[in-house]
Image 1 (tube, rainbow, N blue to C red):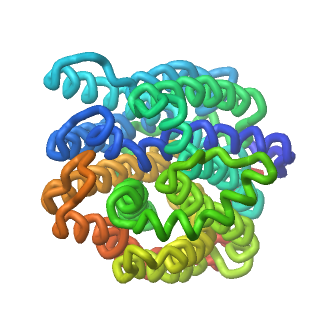
Image 2: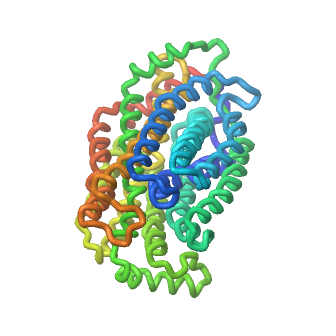
Image 3: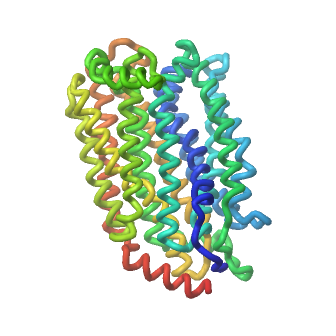
Length: 477
């Protein structure tokens, strides 16, 4: 392995982080609005929406990602193994992201087919872009402290994307479409596609691969897969990622239903009015007069701002106590504030906002650690086998991410249908309201709690991190 300087400049860290900002303009939109788009904008039934999200998502997770991982590990170019994939997919990913959120004038059957095709292409291109991008973090540097720092930069950028999508996007969609949400979301996605493409190109131009496998290293896909199934930390991270994104998709995709159908609109308007007045006085009120989109945006804003605060604390805590221990503790604490939502009355607006802020802060500490732990697992595999297969290791993250997103999204629409949710209805049944409450509280808390238990069996603690880093530095020298 090449052992050139492992220290990263601020320019490279920012350049790398822009790639995740771009990808999350797509990913956060999928997680927050895809279920709502299919049921309340595009016009599909909850049952058909659930089937499309589940089947296409699982195919993408378990077929697209392993194939891309195996190919990327065997890519050799003057730009490296992983950087060229970011270049090749930048424009196609932007185009298909726009098409996936376009509502054509087709029959119902035609819309179902169009949704299947565009969602499939979107997830395939997302895998071809984001899996090599994620694997790139494992070869930019072998210094674990620098890797923790890179993850912190990266996830501050992710939070900016999340902030835009979850805070402003609903209000902008309604405004851009003059009340027609189908037109509005198409206009918004056009801008996001252009901005995201430019950011991915910047990532390609500003990054460098420093950990290069020895020319004599050869391994078959069969050998790589054999290494994976024997790699207990990899299996744990695959499962943990799956569980985490089931929760994020279920919870994130349900908030818009919660605000439109459960939260007391009058009390919400009273609660947020001082904030809106302040924003108007400084000329920064993007929400207009709609209390739902304004309340939804400000609710998400509070969580994301404190999530960013949590992210900034992550590196120092991980350096001192180890990634596993920090991840486990703060994942558990954050889960308590998810469960709390089941007990809030429609008028308990202050408690809703306060719980969201505390959940965001404690969960934010864990966010960079998930990806940094995957990079550690790639090091662990190399340490054990003396062969490095970074991209196929990172396919754990992408398989778990896609499968979790698909299962969580499908559960959202399926549970809504089970509880008799009526799309675009001004009044929902008591049964439907209970289903919406469960979707943002009890149901998403379960995978998080299982993940906390799973981390007891993850063996790469602080002591082992130091040992792996030291041994690999000696070998690469």
